[in-house]
Amino acid sequence: MLRPTLFLLLAGVLQIVSAHFELKYPTTRGFDETKEPTFPCGGFDTVQNRTQVPLKDAFVEINSGHTSYSYVVNVLAKNDPTTADFSTAVVAVSSGTRNYPQAACLSLNLSNGTGITNGSNATIQVIFNGGDGLLYQCTDVTFVDSAPNFDQSMCVNADGSSTATSSGSAPAANNTQSKASSVTVSSGFLLLVIACIYITV
Ligand SMILES: *[C@@H]1O[C@H](CO)[C@@H](O)[C@H](O)[C@H]1NC(C)=O
Ligand SMILES: *[C@@H]1O[C@H](CO)[C@@H](O)[C@H](O)[C@H]1NC(C)=O
Ligand SMILES: *[C@@H]1O[C@H](CO)[C@@H](O)[C@H](O)[C@H]1NC(C)=O
Ligand SMILES: *[C@@H]1O[C@H](CO)[C@@H](O)[C@H](O)[C@H]1NC(C)=O
Ligand SMILES: *[C@@H]1O[C@H](CO)[C@@H](O)[C@H](O)[C@H]1NC(C)=O
Ligand SMILES: *[C@@H]1O[C@H](CO)[C@@H](O)[C@H](O)[C@H]1NC(C)=O
Ligand SMILES: [Cu+2]
Image 1 (cartoon, helix red, strand yellow):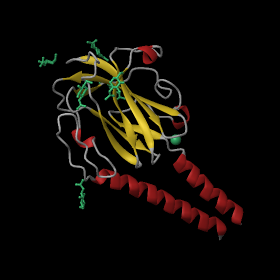
Image 2 (cartoon, rainbow, N blue to C red):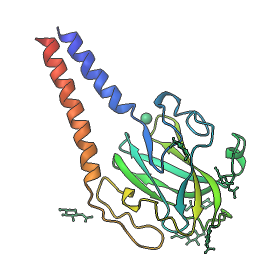
Image 3 (cartoon, rainbow, N blue to C red):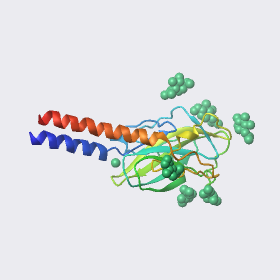
Image 4 (cartoon, helix red, strand yellow):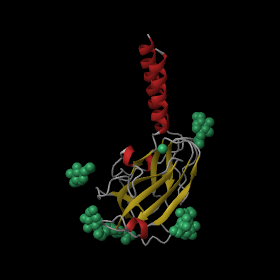
């Protein structure tokens, strides 16, 4: 009766480890954990509905299953980029490392020679390295001067650190969202423990 318990515990641990990362905002083209290592967009190669993103204070919000990782965010200013375009025509607009899991707000600097102006269609590509290979997510956007529907409150860091963007305005760092995802993780673990007890008995 020990073996199924160990197996379930191991399965739970593996599931947490393999969580990789998800692009939470703007809406990802698609997320499939098994395809996420596929260049350039984690297995989702067609343009989806565009989110209007402001030229100033732009960001992407991700949810990381890894505690420690590095990232690069690229923009590709084309209507319908091909796979080859992602190798030749991208411009890095953000890069860095984080040392905490879950919610992270990655601010974008669009003055980095992107050629993007009011009304430019583009695809944002997030490349994530949590130590188990490069992972990819994309979202399709239109950059505009004024984006009233862009939800600045989605910019959250799970460690509570400042989310200051290029112009220095920072949405509140203390937010219930990261707490909510911790609750999801712990209740998932609780279910696992209950399942183990059930099988042991
Ligand atoms: C994309 O936009 C179209 C037209 O506005 C809408 O009908 C469709 O439901 C949207 N798709 C998604 C995935 O939001
Ligand atoms: C700006 O672009 C250059 C060249 O693509 C890149 O080396 C640099 O890291 C970029 N800056 C940021 C903030 O990502
Ligand atoms: C940006 O583009 C929109 C839509 O074409 C237009 O209404 C707006 O005036 C433009 N803003 C500026 C500052 O040019
Ligand atoms: C941007 O993309 C939308 C649909 O994805 C399209 O209708 C529009 O014409 C494009 N704008 C430009 C300037 O190409
Ligand atoms: C978050 O809230 C806690 C307690 O409510 C406080 O001690 C901490 O300084 C706050 N952090 C930030 C970044 O505001
Ligand atoms: C954005 O990138 C430009 C060009 O690389 C640079 O001059 C500027 O200082 C950057 N802004 C921020 C806030 O990093
Ligand atoms: Cu991973």
